[in-house]
Image (cartoon, rainbow, N blue to C red; front, side, top):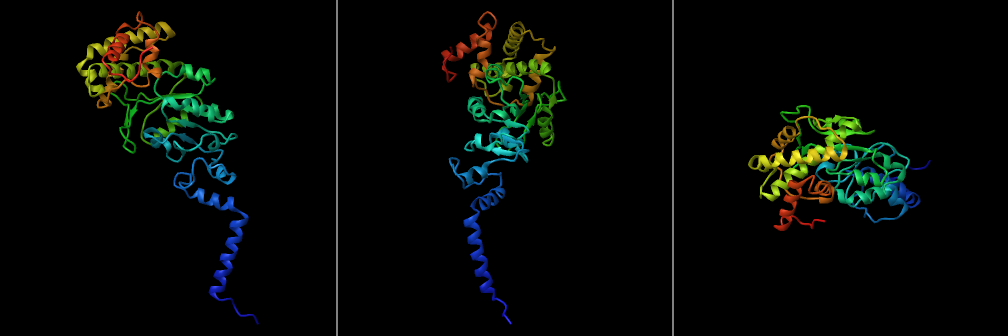
Amino acid sequence: YSPLPTFKQRLSSFQHSTMKLSTAFPALLAFSMYTTSAQGFSSSAPSSCTTSSCRQTTQLSATDTIVIGGGRIGSLISNDAKLLGRNDPVASSIDPNGEGPIFIATRNDVLESIVEDCPESRRKDLVFLQNGYLDNFLASKDLLSNTQALLYLSVTAKGVDPVDGITTVNPEGLTAATGVHAQAFADRLATLGLKCNVVSAEDYRPAMFEKLIWISTYMLVGTAKNCKSVGQAGSDHKHLVESIISELVAAVSAKEGIAFQEGTIERLAAYTDVVTDFPCGVKEFEWRNKYFYDLGDEACPLHNGLLRECAEEGKIGFELP
């Protein structure tokens, strides 16, 4: 007869077994901690960790949708996706053998590093959500055929409900996407109650330039005329806004051979009514107004003259070329 072990003896045996397991399989325990993290990454692990077990904890599943950028837009669309924040390493966080969309919701000035850090085999899955003229950059990376999206929505602060770009002129919404992951992006927005039109590359191009014209015109006029918002720019300086829009439409049509649908001025004015309180500011010049500035004064005299006026009065934080 052997007496049953006491509770204290059983507890001691369990603790001894656990210590042996942690010594033999540290990576396994680390992975268990990783999977319980709220956003898929251990908040206690430093971004500079280089151990093999740490790299394992930041490696994503091959089938995961990824969102790069934890700001207003990235947080909005992340849902069940793996969200990579500012300090999360891109290179070790993307499975080179995986598949699925990788949404980039960051400022334009970090696109270079994101593309370079992304495994080459996954660069085809990068989805660009940025405002502005991206063609030259995408062409330099051989990514012109990648999925792109035009976001006609406003998120005033992180965590705040978005305002969709549904207008009186376009009740179907103005947000559009094109490319292999366009439908996946539209589906993701649909779960948030937001509209997105999946379009062909041919239809996307004039829409892209129309959004570029909107942000370049309203922000410039608002800055030049000391307006607090795009709504004020459109209402107080309606004639100037419309004149610049007409000028830029003609310049783009001549340069790119693009035919815009009738009603550009009305479409952009209706969208401005939706985001009327959005503040004005000429920013990211190389991605926005520079495209028109480079077309020259003959093509864009009003636009370029107003830019120079802003520069002379110290209203922009950069020097014109």
